[in-house]
Image 1 (tube, rainbow, N blue to C red):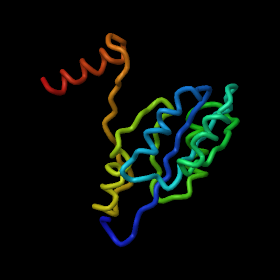
Image 2 (image 1 turned 90 degrees about the vertical axis):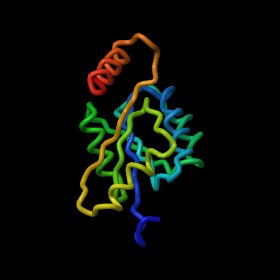
Image 3 (image 1 turned 90 degrees about the horizontal axis):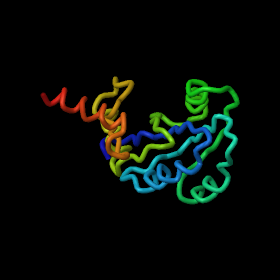
Image 4 (image 1 turned 120 degrees about the horizontal axis):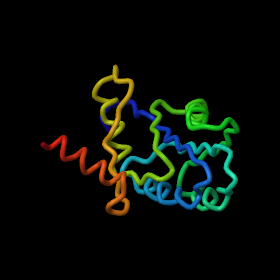
Length: 146
């Protein structure tokens, strides 16, 4: 490892009414080159049940699940921060599929500089072609490259 002290990680995920999507995220988290120390899932008072998907991954991920009754992403994310037990908190969304080295790469800068407080990464959209989001990313890439 980079140092004698291993930094611990909490991946915080906010979700609402999307149990059909979160399985892909969970699968990607099980395949990380650096395993998360905990995965904190905050359900923002869904009507849909997550019981089956949570049960399916409890033996494969260090899941901790909570329900936040106050509506909105800020309240749910703040609940995730309150519940997280570790030194580094990483946020991802229920419809994201992080690459295998995502967690490892996000933690790396904290080993290099103890004064770093936050790290961000590049996000890409892999959905259907021709969507508004994809056209935005293509235009943005062309602007950056041009």
